[in-house]
Length: 157
Image 1 (tube, helix red, strand yellow):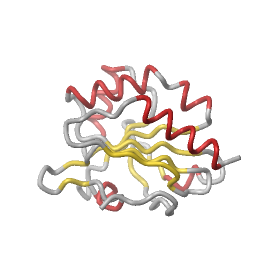
Image 2: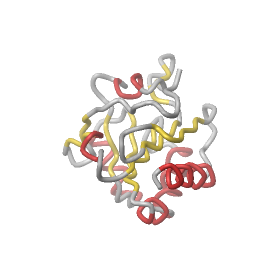
Image 3: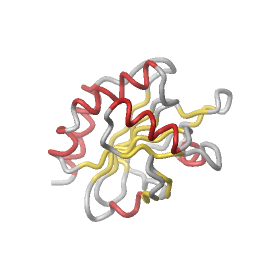
C-alpha cells in the first residue's frame, strides 16, 4: 500500500543519471520535492509522461520544487534516455537493491519487477502533502501535477 499524505517521506540516497548520489533529506529545509516513480525508461507511456514534465518544467521551478524521476533502470540507461529526450532534471536509479525505494513508498509491483506510476509531492519539511497513482498503463495528467503543486503551495504558506 502506498504511503499516505501527511506522513514523513522515507529518506533515501540513489545515484542519478550521472552517477552522483542524490539524497532526499538534502532538500529538507530548502525546497519541496516532486518524486515521480515511473516503470521503465525508453517505453512509450513513460517517455510521453516525462516529456510532458520536461515541457512544463517551469511549473516546478516557479514553485521552487525539485523534480526527481525514479525507476528501477540503471544509471547508464537513464543517462542515455535523458540525453535522447533532453531531460534536464535528475533521474534516479532504484536499481540495486532492486526497487528498494519504490518498496519503501509502497509502489513497487512485485509481479512486474518495477514501480507503478506514482507521484509524491513532499514539502520543505519532508512531509508528503499530495500524491497520486494511476492504474498500470495509464499516464498521469499534467493537471494532476498542477493540482498537487497547488496543494503544497497552500500548505507551505
